[in-house]
Image (cartoon, rainbow, N blue to C red; front, side):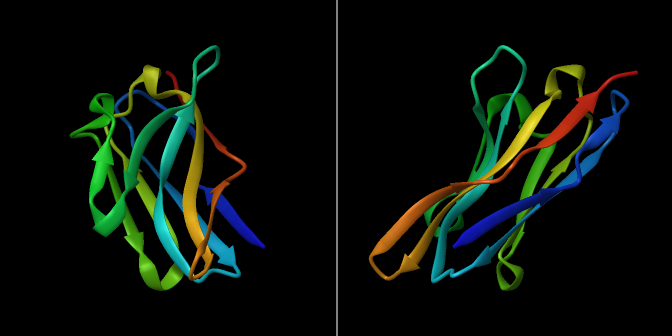
Length: 120
């Protein structure tokens, strides 16, 4: 089985920074795509940033210029550096990945989520 384990959430003041990490472990043949989504209370889950096919990055308009996604392929880990945080960034952040378990078997996985709260 495959697990996605997130870390790095917490409470930060407006204008502050946080760095989230998500490590994939288990029977991984190849990671196809990996990234971050978030869900605020009363709202739908939305894309924050992700690596798509070929390593292309995709960001939500609301975080462009403030957040940066990066990865360590050797560690099957993706990071989200969040700068200039705003109260509206408050949400549960979820890691998501499309992972090949075998050459022709791909499954989608979610992490358990990590809370990010931006408040003074």
